Each structure stands twice: as structure tokens, then as C-alpha cells.
Image 1 (cartoon, rainbow, N blue to C red):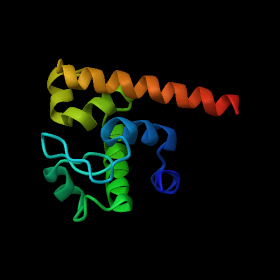
Image 2: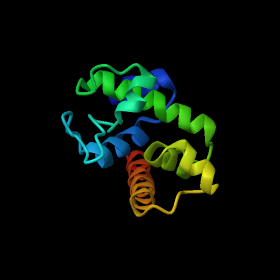
Image 3: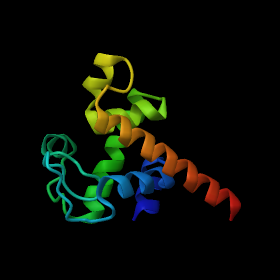
Amino acid sequence: LIHSLSARHGVDPLLVYAMVEQESNFNVFAVSPKGAQGLMQIIPDTQKMLGLNTPFDAAANLDAGIRYLKIMQKEFPELRLALAAYNAGPDAVKQYGDIPPYPETISYVSRIILRYGYLLEMEEDS
């Protein structure tokens, strides 16, 4: 699913893999303390914006999350800012002009970038 949906939306599937691993550890029924749901941990307000009605359906959640990531990448071409916007919201990134100084967001961005880099290296080596 990650590969086919990423290809459909023009997003690197290795990046999506790293995000899903960080967001939900591949638990389709994951719910965060803040109410984010599913594989890509999408909050209810963002679900409404994306037309996601079945957040625990793997394909629907991945499709919505990848579409949202693509929106963030268009708004914030620098990967670390796109990831920060996915996690903390685009308004927070705009407000600070950088990764917001939230410990969760700082950790989120660094973990995904490290994992994504590792996955890219592994792909190159194979």
C-alpha cells in the first residue's frame, strides 16, 4: 500500500515508511493522546479537511496522510519543515519560521530524517 499510494501522489515511499513507523509503528488502530488516529496519525480536524471518514482503514488513512504530506511538501519545500508542519501544523512552522520549539516536534523531525536516511542507504546498497 505504501508503495502504490506514494507513487500515485509522487511522494517517496521510503519517507512514508519512516513516517508510518514513527507515527504508529504500523498499528492501524493506533490512537495518540491528542486524538490522532491510524497509521499516519491524522487528527480529526485534518481528517475532515482531507475527507477521511474511515481513519482505521489502512488504505484510506495512508492515502489521506500521503496527500497531507504532499500538501506540506508543496508549502514547505525543505523536508525538515514539511515534517514539522505535518507534526505540529503549518501555522506553527509559519509562526516560528522554522521547526517549532516543541520537544515532540524536534524529536519527530530528527527521528524521521535519521530513519529515512538509513532507508535510503539500505536501498542504495541493495
